[in-house]
Image (cartoon, rainbow, N blue to C red; front, side, top):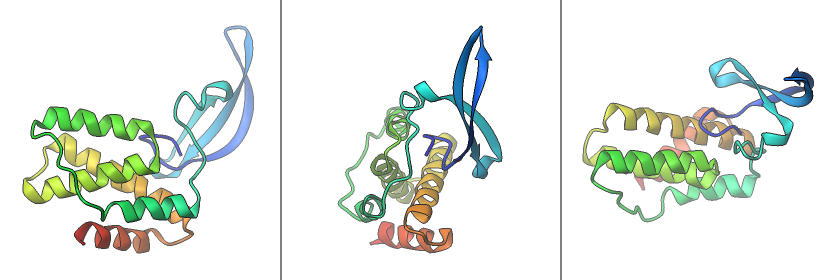
Amino acid sequence: MYPLQGVGVITQIEEIDFRGIDTLYFVIYLDISDMTVRIPVDKYQDMGIRPIVGKEESQAAIDSISSKYEPMPVDWKARYQMNVDLLKEGSIASIAKVVQALYHRSKIKELPVQERKLYDTALRLLIDECSISLEKDKKEIEMVVFGRLES
């Protein structure tokens, strides 16, 4: 899982000469954006890249979006920054929190364009990771997520 980018597959580990130093890189293919990235093996944790969560953690994230909603700041810039920071954390619980907050906010008032994009990104990240973790179709996970948000 690559924060803000989505689920990827390590296709290989390659050694590249970078400024005279041989460095190992993960070559990660991100299907959602049809993009390949190279990340230094010794820097992947600093960048928030992590393995897909297990079934229990995935289910807990989905369950958490039906918990009591904590209103966020009215000022959209402050709210936006809080949500970006949560997504950068990269944990599935943080992603679920952003989905919940922006979904409920959108029911009160239409989201500004940047927040709408952030919501769409968070929702895609949550659905993609949960579908792989829970071994279910993305459409099925999407229905579950929206069912929890509505409850």
